[in-house]
Amino acid sequence: IPGLTFDHSMDLSYAKEFNVDYYNDGYALLTIDQEGQFLVVPEGKKAPEGLDPDIAVLQQPINNIYLVATSAMELEGIATEYNIPVERPRCVMYFHFQEIEAKDAMEQKKMIYAGKYSAPDYELILNEGCDLAIESTMIHHNPEVQEKLEQFGIPVMVERSSYESHPLGRTEWMKLYAVLLGKEDVAEKVFKEQTDKLDKVLTADKTDKTVAFFYINSVGAVNIRKSGDYVSEMISLAGGNYVPEDTGVNDNALSTMNMQMEEFYAKAKDADYIIYNSTIDGELKTIDELLSKSKLLADFKAVKNGNVWCTGKNLFQETTGLGTMIEDIHTMLTTDDDSLDELTYMHKLK
Image 1: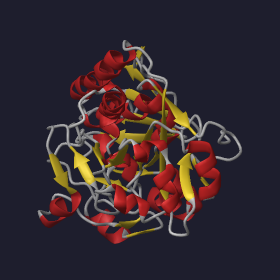
Image 2: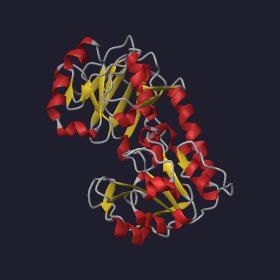
Image 3: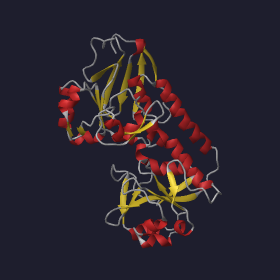
C-alpha cells in the first residue's frame, strides 16, 4: 500500500476465508475471499494517497453498524456502547461477556430496526450515521441494495464465516470484527477459551459411536447436514461418527439436504445417539413430541436406549461457543451419568 509499511499478518488457526495484514501506525488491511478488501484507518489518521480504488476505507471509530448478517451477530461480540441496527431479533454476546436479547436491546434503544437485507430503511441508516454495513452473501440476490448503500458512502462488507469448513474457523471470525472495533485482545482471549476446550477433547480417545443430527420438516421429510458440513465435523472432532455418511458433499453449495423418512430410517436407525435440530421448528422436551413427528423413530436404537438430545433454538447464532458445543457432544458420547440431562447447548429428551 503506497505510503504504508507492512508489519505483519494476523496469525489464524482455522479460518480460511479472510486474512488481516497490519501496517505501521495502526493501519490494517482486511481481505475477505471473493468479496474484497478494506483498509481500517485509525482515528485521527487519513487513508494514504494513491490507495487502490477497489479497497474500501473504514475510518475508525466505527460507532454504528447496519448488521444484516444474523449469523455474525453473536460472533461479532460488539460492546454495548455500540448502536447496531439489525434485521431481526437474535441473541447477542458482547465483548463484555453479557448476553442480551436483541428485542430488549431495541426497547432500550441500544439497537434500532433498520429493515431487512433486501429492503433497508436507507433514511434511518443515513440519519443514524452508519459507518459500515455487514451483509451475508444473501445480498448478492439484491445487488442493487449494495450499490445504493455504497452510493450513500456506506462501505458494504460481505462476510463469509458460514463458508468455513472447520467449526472454529467460524468462531475465529471474531478476530476480524475485533480489528474494526479495537478489541483484538478480548477476541484473542475468547477464542483461546474455545480452542482450549477443543484441544482437551482432541486428547481423548475417539468413541466411534454414531450420531444422527436432523429435523423433520413440515411435509415429513428429514433434513440432514451433508457429510463434511461443519456440524458433522463437530461430531467427528468430539469423537463420534456422523450418520448418514453418504450424503453428497459437492453436488451443490447447500450444507443440508432432504430425504424421505424411509430412506433416513434405513441409514440411521442404528445410530447410537440422536441430536434433534430445534432451530427451525422449536425445541422439543419429550421423546413423545419427537415420535409425534414420525412413528418410525420409535424403532431407532437411540430412541429405545433413551439417547435422544435436542439443541437449543439459537444454536446457529452461538458462533463464539462452537468449542463448547464440541465439548457438549463429547460429554454426551462419554458420560456414564444417566442423570445428566442438560448441557450448555443441548438437553436430553425425557
